[in-house]
Structures are given as structure tokens and as C-alpha cells.
Amino acid sequence: MTKQSASHAKHLPLVLPALLLIATLLAGFFLVRFLERVGSRNLQEQSENIVGAMAMGIKNELHSAQLAAGAMAGSPWIPPLLLDPSSVNLANAHSVLDRYRENFGFSVCYLLDLQGNAIASSNRDAADSFIGKNYAFRPYFQDALVGRSNVYMAAGSTSNQRGFYAASPVKDPQGKVIGVAAIKKNVQEAESVMAGFKNSFFVSPQGVIFMSGSPEKVFRILWPLDKDARLVLKSSKQFTVASLEPLLRVPVKNGKEILFSGEACRIFRSPLGPPGWSLVLLAPLHTVLHYTLFGWIVTLFVGSIILLLAFWVSWRIKSQAALQESEAKYRSLFENSRDAIMVLHGSSRKFTAGNPATLTMFQVKSEEIFRTLRPADLSSDLQPDGRFSSEKSVKMIETALRDGFHFFEWTHKRFNGEEFPATVLLNRMQMGREVAIQATVRDITLQKKAEQELNQKIGELERFNRIAVGRELKMIELKEKIRVLEKGNEAAP
Image (cartoon, rainbow, N blue to C red; front, top):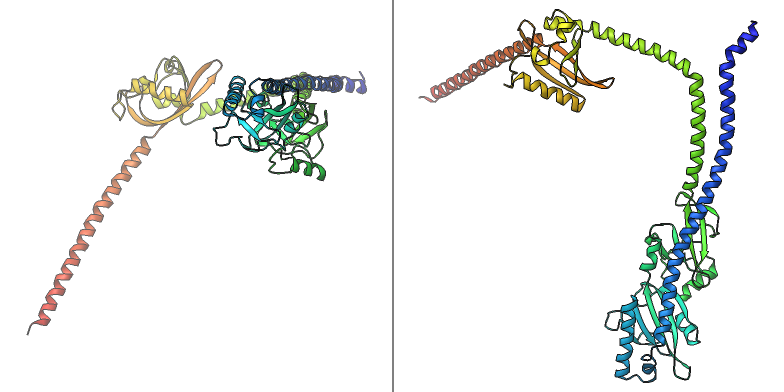
């Protein structure tokens, strides 16, 4: 075999995985594009279904309000009050208004004369009663005067509460319009269909948000308004807009992708209600991103498998070498440590291994004999706190198993019966499927002896200090007596 062919054979295992990796990345690119289209189509269908469901709920509210206003205007007890404002006719009209409000869950049912004055109302006894108020400026009243039934959305000029307004003309027996029957229904029930979608908006032709899945955005402006639109909005007295600063910087166009509150969204807009009103949903694009990410994850996963297969042999050899080196280091540390290192089985509480320092410290002849022992066999009967070693050792091991480690002082006993103080460090470790405890024991006899000698010297110093201080006090007392005697002799004649 020539050098050139040998070189080719050497690099062949790397060339084939590289080619497979390139092919995988290319196929992954097309997979990602395909999944992106699938995710976009699913987002389109899901968002259209959401918008359709919300639109259906709002349409039902508007339609029911409009039908109720027409039915109320056709009640035989309503026209008499407009023709003859007697107390009897007023009581009968109020009875009708109250019945419609209670049965249909409206906020207010009221009756307006030809000048737009409220002459009867179901909220007549409330603090914000409509009685005596004039609503001639409202479009629903003006439409009803010319025989058109209409639905109007606005903030109440009396209560400032949002509502759907529906009005219908009241006619005399000859078909002449003599007044207007109107109802107001609060928007809470209709708005509930939007509650699960924070970026859903029911907006006026001027872009004022009338209902939203985010209540704090109500009466905000969704898109920029020109000067004329602002004047129309102000003159209509339809809404109380706190700020004309728009939430979006661009016009709302169906299908357009924008950035809203730091999140990429696609606009879904559908006409709803009176002319110019619409339902807007800003659908987050993260669902499409999930499809794209899934495609890249699949691509990267397959590519990773190829790379892993290509370099598995090399990794295997290196890992085996590293494992052998690690085992050798641990064995060297285990064998040559001056501290006693032993391994305790987690469930049987028997020793399974002990290094040479362990055998020396406890004066056990062989590791075989050591493996037959339990911790209590190498402990004094009682610990310094008066507890039995057989009971306390169990608690120490349970603490280490629970917390992962435990450090404490212990009175151990050698195999010949000699007791000695020691520190013990217990560490929980996993050995295959079994849980074990590694115990490191250090004989602190010399340390304890040094502490006793130190305490003894400290006691002697304290006694010496007390004697020295006593002598000093006596000298001070003697000097004071001499000073007093000398002063007395000087004063004598």
C-alpha cells in the first residue's frame, strides 16, 4: 500500500461522517422551512378560530340588545306615557322598563322624548339616575328619530361606565315617531370572551380600545391618529381618552407582523359591529418559532448522533484511560492516607473496605476481619454525652445519608479495648446501585492532650494574676495608711 492510499484510508472514517453531517444539515434546512410553514398555517387557523369565537360572543350581545330595544319600544305600555305623562302611564312604563332590565340583565332601560330628555328610567332611584338627563347628542337617539334601530358603544356620560346602547323608535297608532326606547348593557359579559387573550382588542373606527383582554389598555389608542381623526374623537364625546399616545407605531393591517411589548406578533383583524369597528388580535409568533426550533433540534440531534458515532471510539479510549488514572489516584490516596478511611454499606451498616491506616489505628490484623465489624464494635460503650454508642452511631449514619455528609467527634475503641478520641467525617456516596458511606477517622489524642495542657496553663496564669492583683491592692492600701499618718503628724502642735 502506497503512502497516498494509506493516508486516504486513515482519513476515510472522518470523511464519511463529514459528508453525512453536510447532508443532514442540508436536509434540516428544508425540514425547518417546511415546519415553519406548518406552524404559520396552524397559527393562522388557530387565530382565526379565536377571532371568530370572540366575534360570535360580541355579535350575540349586540344583536340581543338591538332586539330587546325593538321589543321594548313595541310594548303597549310605552307610547301612552309619551302621549300623556300621567302618573298612571308613568307607573306602567316603569313597570315595563324594570321587567326588561331584570329579565335580560341590562344595566338601564329608559325612555326618551323627542327632545332627548329621559322621562322614565329603570335606575330612577339611583344616585346616577338618567331621569331629567338629555341624550339628544347621542347618535343612537338621532338614528332612532328617523326610524333606524342602531347599536352604539360608548362610555356613559352619566356613569362613565362602558356599555352597549341600543335604541328603537316608539310610534303612535298612526306610525309617527313620538319618542325613543333605549337600553344600556354593561360590557363585562361580552368582554369575558377576550379574557384569555391579553392582546385582543375591540376598537372603534378611530382606534380607541373599547374592550380588551388587558383591562389596563381600555380607552387607549391602538394606532396613530391624524389631526382630523383626533378632532372627530374629541367632538363625539364617545370616550374619555386619557392619552392619545398610540400603543402601535404603525397602522393595523391584517397579516402584518410587528413587534409589540418586546414580542413578535402577527395581526389578525376582522370587521365587527357598526361600520369601522373591528376586532384585533395580536397573535404571538412564538408558536411558529416552536416549530422552527423543533426542526433545528431534530437536525442538531441527528448531526450530533453522527458526530458521536464518528468520535465514539476515540472518546472511549480516552475515557478508559482517564478512568484508570482516576482509579489509580484514588487507590493511591486510599492506600497511603495517614487517616483511617473505610467504606460502610448503607443498609447493612457493615464495613466493606478499610485502608492500611484503618487496620493500624484500630489494631485489626487483616481487612477480612475488619469487614466483619460494625461501627459499634469499634466504639466505646458510652459516648461523652452519656448515650450508648450502638444507638448514637445509627443516628450519625442516618444524618449523613440524609444530608450527604456529617462531621462530629467520637470516642473510638481499638480492637484490644483501648479507647481514644477522634474526629469522624461521614460522606454519602453512590457505588453502582448501592448507597455507601465513606468514613474518614482521625486520632486526636495528641490534640486533646495539648488542649488539656493549654487549659492547665491558662488556669495557672489566672491564679497567678489573682495573687498579683491582691498584692497590688494591699500595697495601695498600705501606702494610703502611711499618707494618713504623715498628714496627722504634720497637723500635731
